[in-house]
Image 1: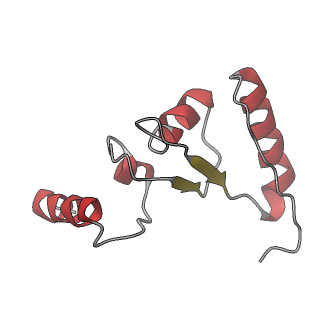
Image 2: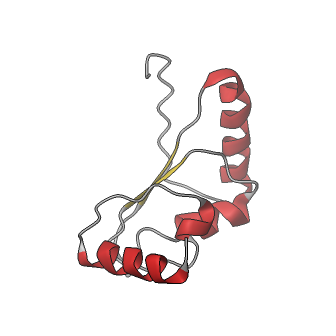
Length: 104
């Protein structure tokens, strides 16, 4: 995306003209909007530092935020274990796990 389109996107998002953004890690890197309340990750972050960096995009300015990591398929058990170890190692608390095999 060229810089002018990106600036237009940022302006529309900040003004509320765009309600949801689906993009890569590069899309959210550096965004600082206090109104963003939920971040959905489609991949398990490489490590706790990356997780905390991404999670820092939500719940800013004293507001609560939520990070949802979507995992499933063949790698579900492995990814769930990686997340659990990452949370423990980095003292990430207030975690809710919904392990529902019936989600599609």
